[in-house]
Amino acid sequence: MPWCDTCDRMVDDDELDEGHVCPTCGTDLEERGPVPWYFRAMIVVTVLYLGYRTYQGVDWLIHHA
Image (cartoon, rainbow, N blue to C red; front, side, top):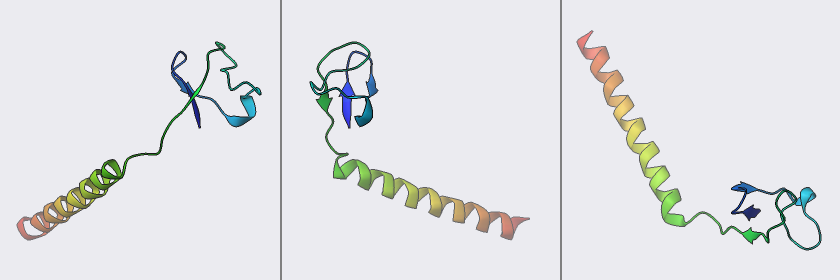
């Protein structure tokens, strides 16, 4: 998806002209690369950790209530 640094927004493909310029400000657009693998891995590990901590909290509540 094309990105405009000046407007700080993504431009939809249906908004693009043939010159790959921003329809709002007229600057040339850049292509953003994919999300790095280590960021996705960090998200997965964080979700697993928070799920485990939630399980521990529920287990503690059941035994101490």
